[in-house]
Amino acid sequence: MALEIVSIKDLILDDEHNKVRIRYEEDDYLKLEKTRVFKSTFDSIGLKNAVFSSCNINNSIFKNCYLRYAKFNNIDFTGTKFENCDLLNAEFNSCNIRYVKFMNCQLNLKQMMSCLPHETNLKIALLKELRMNQLSIGDNKSADEILIKIHDNEKLLLLERVKCETSYHKKREDFFSRINAYFNYIFLTLNDIVWGYGLRLSRLFRTGLVMIVFMALIIFLFTDEEYMTMTLAGTQLVKLDFWQSVYVSYTNFINIGYGNYIPVTKKTTIIFGIENLLGFIYLGFLVSGVYRRIAK
Image (cartoon, rainbow, N blue to C red):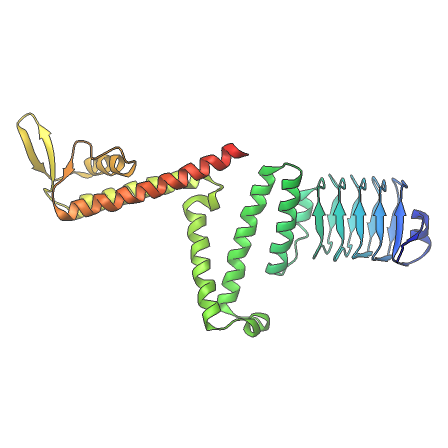
């Protein structure tokens, strides 16, 4: 069914418009209030500085529209799609943007974030749409920032599933799904702590430092004269002090060998083997994180 073609002025004259199309027009100072637009298309429209107030624009499409500096106050955009639109510096105040899709649009992300839905699952869905949009325009930095928000909200959603405090989750979750959600929550939490979902290398370096100090404490507190070292008097067994333990832990963790102190008992060999394995795993995380930065 073809859409009825109308003018921008017709939007002002009538309060309700269903299945209409407005195209190739421009009205930089349009003021539209308390109007309902449903399953309609705005195609190649220039609405710079336009002001929309208390309107419902549902299941519609904005395509190739110039909406820079436009103001949207209390607008319900449920189910609407924006394609190739310029929304840079546009203002969104108290707007409902549930199920809204964006494709190759210039967005005012700060304003978008202020209108995220309260429901965690809907918030995640919208954040994913925003991330895909930023990737489509080559803004990888913003896409990564949004990805962190996605994972943070995924943790909240998993926690909601575990607690089952709402009727929505009580109907959908059983014992096994809650256990699965709990383990996924732990995995995401550790992912965040260890290296910020692979997006924060500073956390990865902090993790490496913590692991080195932790293993140094184990070596210092739980081992005795169990290390062979070379001195001017020849080979001898020694107990490591704290700073020697840190040195040994560091050299072993970064996989450059035992250094000046070689473990000679089964217990110390196991400790060094575990740390060496952790060092290999850490190196994999580090290479992955650095590659991600370079690939941008």
